[in-house]
Each structure stands twice: as C-alpha cells, then as structure tokens.
Amino acid sequence: MTSGTSETVAEIEQFHAPYGREIRLHDVSYETGLKLLRITIKEGRRITVIEIDAETAAHWSRSMADWAARSAR
Image (cartoon, rainbow, N blue to C red; front, side):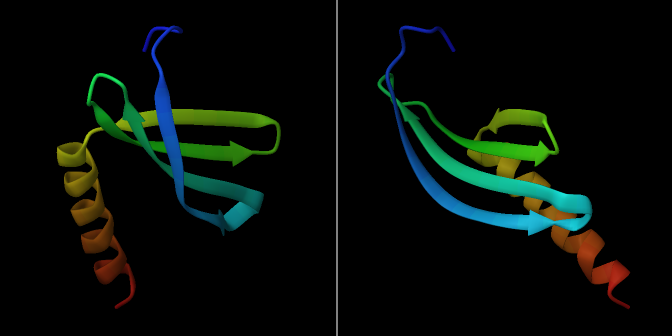
C-alpha cells in the first residue's frame, strides 16, 4: 500500500510457535474499504509480514487444518 493510505489495525491474536517464533494476526482496514489479514512472523531479529484477503485466508486455513488433522493421526 502507499505510505499515505490510512489504516485501522486491530489485534486478533498473538501466539508462540516452535523454535522461538512469534506469530501475530491483525485485522487491517484501509480507508478505501479494503480489509486484509496481516500476518507477522518474528524469528529472532527477522520479521516477515504478509497481508492476505479473506478468500486467501479461508483457503490457507483449510489447507492448514487438513494438514493438522492428517499429522495428528
């Protein structure tokens, strides 16, 4: 997004993952009406941030849930 675009950010969840990783999920709403899920993964000093739309989030969550169900067996 451009640096002049106003956004409203609300934290959804923050949790720890293996190997000292920290994951944060934020609901981001832009003044244009665009809504995205911001995923921030912190690994030591490295930080990765991606923003995805609802359709991508739904697809990703189904894939992750399927993988978790198969791995739990």
